[in-house]
Amino acid sequence: MSSDVITIFDTTLRDGEQSPGCSMDTEEKLEVAKSLVELGVDVLEAGFPIASPGDFDAVQKIARRYGDRTTVCGLARCRPEDIDRAWDALHDAQNVRIHVFLATSAIHREFKLKMAKEEIVRRAVEMVRYAGDKMASRSDITTPNIEFSPEDAARTELDFLCEVVEKTIDAGATTVNIPDTVGYATPNHFRKVISYLKDNVPNIDRAVISTHCHNDLGLAVANSLAGVEAGARQIECTINGLGERAGNAALEEVVMALRTRGDYYGVQTGIRTERLFPTSRLVAGITGMQVQRNKAIVGQNAFAHEAGIHQHGILQERSTYEIMRPEDVGYVGTNLVLGKHSGRHAFRDRVTSLGYELEEDVLQTVFEDFIKLADKKKEIYDSDIQALVDQRTQRV
Ligand code: KIV
Ligand code: ZN
View 1 (cartoon, protein in one colour):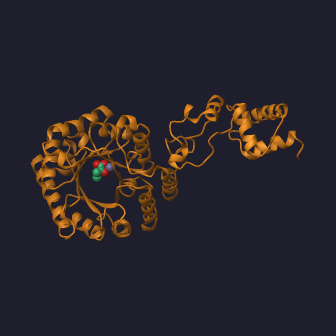
View 2: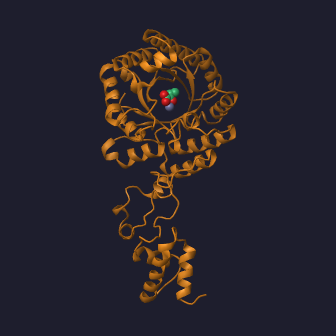
View 3: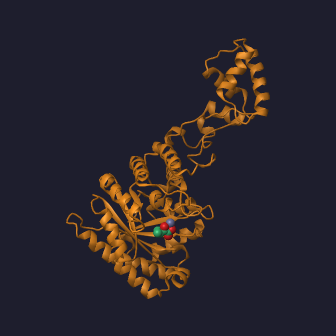
């Protein structure tokens, strides 16, 4: 099942919401869901219906409102009651997926589940079938859309991982998601895990391989991209990289990496990238989790240039210092930030855009005033520049 299209599976409302201090009420989730649909995510994981009545309510409302524009997904442990609850929340959606998970690594088997390998395989297979049968009860569903995740896959013995993946595909999983639950993998390691599955699971082509990378070592995006190199065709990610602990792979980063380096990856997503910045702002506003200024793609400084040499280059030809166009990610803000590192070119540009036409000698004097001011002040606003010009041209 190798194609050049990557499915973007957004889990901002499920894994992202698990981020400490990020919980949202139903109305807020509906607002985020609307923005994600406009952004063009292929699958929207709306929550974990059995977790709480509020989660159930949000998943159900999102499924009913947006299930015709995206695939709405709900999470369930490998338990019939979880799957029943997920299906109750989801069944009104036109496009629907149930996501079941069970841990497979030795550490989880021994300390969390206290289950042997055989029992894990049996439970996973039974519950994937159970979820498939539930969905097939709806007459219009011929191929139930079931995702299975072997939790902590990146720390699972490879042969056992292959066995679980093969048997859950046989049981009806149409997507097999490979979580790096604790963000332990490195790009080379993760690439090898996906390649191993491709090479050793005989029925692997009947399912889509998915990545789900956490960011504990700051490698979630790099690992997701390494997964794509090895043949994964779905990426699970969140807006602003929200998620447990250090977060999940940031949607805006994986999407823009695949687009900007399309020459290398040769794949596409259906994301309307000009919606990235507004969606990021909306999620930051609702969750209260502010985006760091220098965050890639959606940080306030992501497209800001202060150094004079850079500003001069940008004014001549933007590609000298920009690998992406700010408007392609919907960025709004000042491109050329004036500070003590700025040069005369950028300064002149700003003065002109503020409506002034200055003789060269006046411009030089005002520029010198500006450099002195910039030495004392962190940020220079247009009003500061206006005041400097006005002072020298006796407008005040
Ligand atoms: O990180 C993880 O393993 C998960 C699973 C539920 C997919 O979030
Ligand atoms: Zn996760």
